[in-house]
Length: 362
Image (tube, rainbow, N blue to C red; front, side):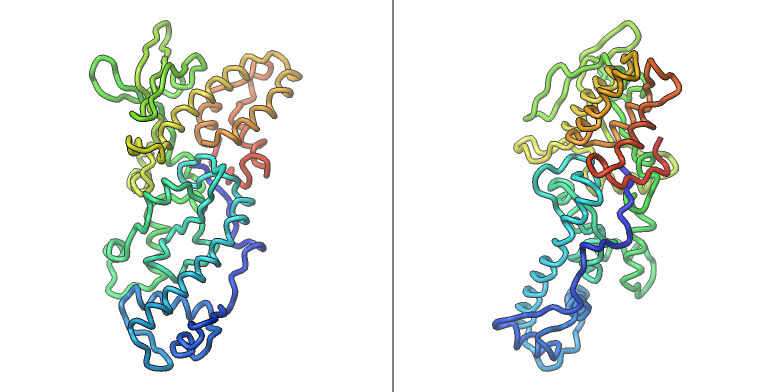
C-alpha cells in the first residue's frame, strides 16, 4: 500500500458554512432549524441524531415523515459537497485506489475512511477522504459500524472523536497517516504447489526473476498460470500476488486486508472485481521491465528507457509491486544504484505517483 501525504486540507476543497435549501424544503428546514439556510454543522448534527436514534431539538413540532424527507434532502446536499473533493484528491494523490493501488482510469469514488452512514459528523472532512475503486468501496461499505467500534472503545458514552480515533489510530492501516503502510502490507508472490501441498510463498528474489512470465489466464476462473524459475528448473503453476502483513502489525494489517477484501479473487460470475488478477498480471509485467533495465549497459541507454518505465508504471498502477520488484535490481552500469530508490524519487511528481510519503519506502 503506497503511503501518501494527503495534507491536512486542500485550497480547492472548501465546504460551505451554511447550506441553502429551496422549494418545499424551505418550511421543513425552518421548522427544524429556524432557518432555510442552516449551518453545515447543524445539518450534520441532525443526521447524527437520526443515526443515534435520539431526539433533535427542533424549533417547532415536526412530524416523523417530515423529518425523514428533510434528512433525505440534507444527505443529498452533503453528497454534493463531499464529491467536490474528487478533483483535489486526484490532483494530490494521482489516479489510483488508495487501498488496492489499481489505476483509476474511469470513475473515481471519494471514499469515507470513517463511514459517513454511521459517523456523519465527519462526512465533509478532508481528513476523512481517500480515493477508492468500486470493488474496494463496495467491500468496505459501511464498516466498521458503531456497535463494533463501541466495543473496541470500552467506554459507556464515547464521543464522536472517540469513534474516529479508535478507527483511525488503533485499527487498520491507513495510507495517509501510516507512513509504514508499504512495509506493513507487503506484496508477495504465492504459487499452488504442483505436488499437492497447497499454496506456498515464493522468496522475493526468485519471485522477482525477470524470466518468470505468464503462461495463461482465465478471467471467469480468476486464475493466472505462470512459468516460475528456480535455479535451473522451471514449473508452470497457478499464481497469486497477495497482500500480506508483518508480525509487528499483523492484527491491524489483517483488519485492513479483510475490510477491503484485498486478497479475494472476485465473483466468478462477473468481471467487476479483478483486483487480485490484475495485481498478479502486473507483477510479471514489472519483472519484465526490471529485467530490461538491469541489462542496460550504458547510462545513455538507461536515460532513454527510464521515462518510458515511469510512464508505464503510471498506467499499470500497483506502486507497491513496482517498488518490491525493483528493490531486488541494480543496473549494470552502476551497481551501487538500486532501481527502487530511483523509482521512489523520480516517480514522486504529478505525472506519475504524486505526494508519496517516502519516509519508509526503500
